[in-house]
Length: 314
Ligand SMILES: [Zn+2]
Image (cartoon, rainbow, N blue to C red):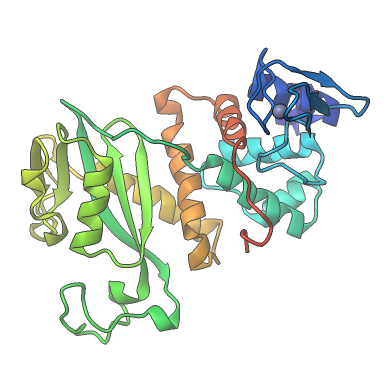
């Protein structure tokens, strides 16, 4: 494949050098104790020993990352990162298995670990701010487990259609999109007022203009934000001036199209991982100035400091 002409996609040594440059640059950090530039190469290629007296531990560029203790060759990892970061809709384990020449099980394992690398980890600052607009909306996708099917609405009324087609049987997702900026998505057990309001308050700064539909889930938001403006979808109103929820709905449609086309069978417990993947690509989209290679590099950098054990990923 021509997109894999670069050396770091071709052999494990070049891949290691590429990863070291990305993760450390000129400052090699011991991942065990955090000591900077105080380690030396051992006889084993790619393995360094910390020179700090209290530590003296060995490490490599994959220590304490999602790539740790994997037997997959590093250039294959880099190919997998590139494919997942550059595809528009996602890459199924079956596609990865064929493109990379690894077993289906290995491909599945790779893709879950890469999703973990794409997850927004650590401290995240609030979205929005003065003069910014954040759109909030909720959607439903995929069936919930039988024992989680609800018989009443979030306000306690019984479903009229026996819940078969209503949101009672679907997995609830809440997304926040900053106009012209990034997205944050959450898989929630129930999209009720309390849950949704907490997500919005915790993630959006007060100076923001909040745009939503007329849903009662957002009632009371006026008090918390600079402004809370709504469009009334039930009256077929989709935009009033610059008030719309078109960005967040656009995001939902990318997510759903991808999920239907590529990941048909996603277990509910993995849904948050797929949301991380779609959020990541959206937050590093071309419009925001990222090309495929840059997007892949950012995902690779996110691999450090995260680990996904095999047991966890099932
Ligand atoms: Zn150390």
